Image 1 (cartoon, rainbow, N blue to C red):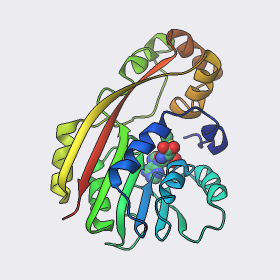
Image 2: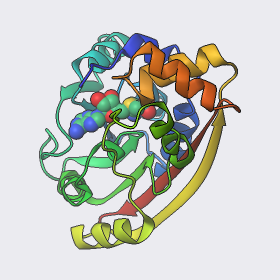
Image 3: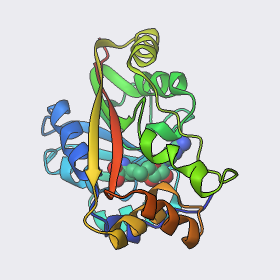
Length: 238
Ligand SMILES: C[S@@+](CC[C@H](N)C(=O)[O-])C[C@H]1O[C@@H](n2cnc3c(N)ncnc32)[C@H](O)[C@@H]1O
């Protein structure tokens, strides 16, 4: 899998910023809490959240070394911040019951097994801890992906897992969470012009594709709009 380009990523007009703001707001962070950002990428959302943690701590976890390089340069020597390489398919790289709140934005649809993810989140949380997450949900990019066979029937794209509400509620419950709220929120996202659309697709969505394939799908997306559907989760540990 091609590495993420953290610098190009941060230069894009990302709908992720709005997804991040919604996710952070849902956590109602307190000034001395410890927050973990799962799949933090370049740390853009984590930096926003850190403003609410003057006496707290932030743990950033991601498996991409290139995204984490950008994340490290963002936070410099801030003693409140720990940046850790880790795979969200495995136990989080923190002590059990050490985290007050977990956020995750635009990352969990990269994982095929959400059962593991919710259980690992539950283990890391202190009693009374809570989670707020955003990721691609059922129906995400359905119109965009339906165009792909017109370009090349053999072309590959990642095997994203776009979970639905019922399955997610059941897994959260089985992991032990309470106060569970799960919803799907359509968020069609127009990009300003073809050049931005193509950079966006190349950096984020179809990172393995050739320039020729990127310009073909860009032509087919006549309204320059990506049909995002977000799966939003809020839950807590009793
Ligand atoms: C679209 S980026 C989102 C980054 C950031 N949360 C944001 O909203 O800008 C997806 C991130 O998920 C991370 N990711 C995907 N699968 C992962 C896994 N199994 N473990 C850890 N991180 C993962 C990628 O490395 C990437 O940084």
